[in-house]
Length: 354
Image 1: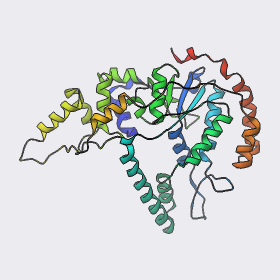
Image 2 (image 1 turned 120 degrees about the horizontal axis):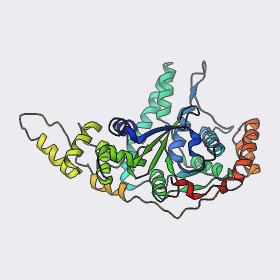
Image 3 (image 1 turned 45 degrees about the horizontal axis):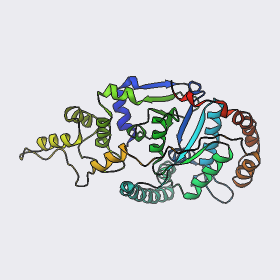
Image 4 (image 1 turned 30 degrees about the vertical axis):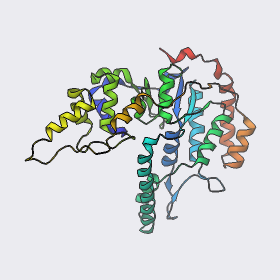
């Protein structure tokens, strides 16, 4: 779902659901981290333009493989452990069939962005080139496997979701296995995560915590109505209704209470033959299956949540020798990891509940 659509609605209608808290507020907590979303963020945020070179630069190893996602995961994991927080990295599994059309659209958009990047470089417009490069970023299976390897070497658990990582994180949160979901994807709330944590990218800024129960209270909705609202706002599993933004979606849902009744209301608004139809419902508006995806996603609670001592030799070989990571930075990080991870299993699961 569009991040700003739902977030702006929460800010307006359920401001009490949002808190800004320092990272140390989560000491002793177990947090499920949406790895797939984080990898994209790390790759995008580290792209830069070196003056005079006429190209968009990325962090790469000596063989030309991207490494920004590994550096990002390394420091994010270290940052959380330093604050006494136990991260679990959750990776996407097989995408649901219903998402294939959306993924196809994204692929086409990436191809177009790559073409625009090349043209921008030819024209010397490096700012546009950087923007297009960020839009065309791809995460390969190799990059994902490298990320899993790094997390395991650091001693933190790796969980491969049966399907969507944010759905898996939400299921673990609802079951009390973790305190919250760390992700920028607002669909985490639609999948039912009790607590959504955003804003880990800036060490100086507090974490934005969103409490689902307070969102529902502020919206005056139950979970079924909230899911329908999110689908009306736009989701990955179906096309949205033309002419409906978050404010109108909220207004119609408050009146109709379900998408079926909202569609009846839209028919009423569109019934005047003298006026152009204001709301266009696409033929493939598959809200029924989308609703089912959010209510009964493919997840598992048979997960291993064990933190181990970091493999210092394996980490050195992987990060320094293979991925060109700084020796000095590696040694500095290892000094912290050795102490932190050894005591990590001392945190109790009870710390995930207030």
